Amino acid sequence: NAGVTQTPKFQVLKTGQSMTLQCAQDMNHNSMYWYRQDPGMGLRLIYYSASEGTTDKGEVPNGYNVSRLNKREFSLRLESAAPSQTSVYFCASSSDRAYGYTFGSGTRLTVV
Amino acid sequence: ILNVEQSPQSLHVQEGDSTNFTCSFPSSNFYALHWYRWETAKSPEALFVMTLNGDEKKKGRISATLNTKEGYSYLYIKGSQPEDSATYLCASNSGYSTLTFGKGTMLLVSP
Image 1 (spheres, rainbow over the protein chains, first blue to last red):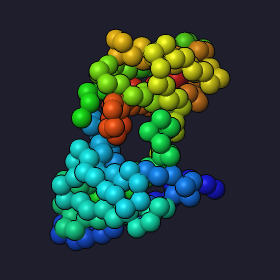
Image 2: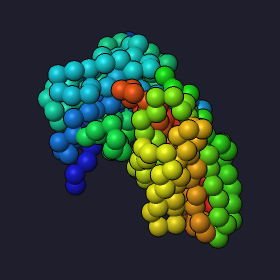
Image 3: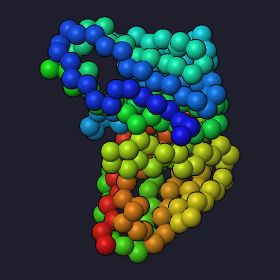
């Protein structure tokens, strides 16, 4: 099915470990986004990529890095995980600012 | 970062009731207003995107209106059904900014 695919769906990390969350879309969208969702906080933007080859910080970028590998793929890396990064992470994509976002199914990350 | 606010925070209605939620956003330099439906354990799904003052959109029993001059949007659900139970998110952007999401309105519809 066409859409946004995120992997993994679940992950438990120990403090200090690193990992990369993968995201791929097959809708030929230009823009891709990484959000985190925490109770009572809503969706907050971590990083985004307006087009292939560009990335920009969002509201909460500290502790994260991203790579727009090509038009389809946008990965999020945690270099040294902290308990404060326990959250549900969503990748999203859109063709244009005037169109709705398509979200992936989310990654539930726990850092212990 | 825009300030997008939604009310109420949660709502519990009976099957067949009609209901509405409010989203307020900064009206200056407005670009677009989005509504999403987010069911538990799933990902948000786009309902509507509106850009012009006075826009009205409808999908089945759900409709939305937009007032960009005063900075608010209403989402209406006519004759709520249990399957309408979800969190409804609104989001707005201005100029060349990315979307800022509100915290959502959680709707529970009891049979």
